[in-house]
Length: 110
Image (cartoon, rainbow, N blue to C red; front, side, top):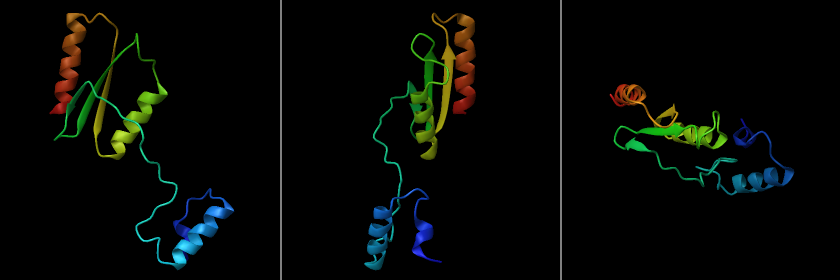
């Protein structure tokens, strides 16, 4: 099996040539290609660091259903073994909805 199997499927000829030379010089050990590096940050509304659980309250005044940013954050956190709970709500919270949210979070955390 050649080193070519380690490469991302969509690479330029130049990337291939550089990889080939790096491989000849034993510089590819521990290296990955085309790996995203996270340059974004997120601040969960509530988080349990030791349990690696994060909760976001998504009020409809600010969050759109299927928001691309929100989904990307969830994906990035899940890749780091976090569990994420997103809860949509319409403001102002009624006592009934507040109770539902608390129950949902309690089940998620436990």
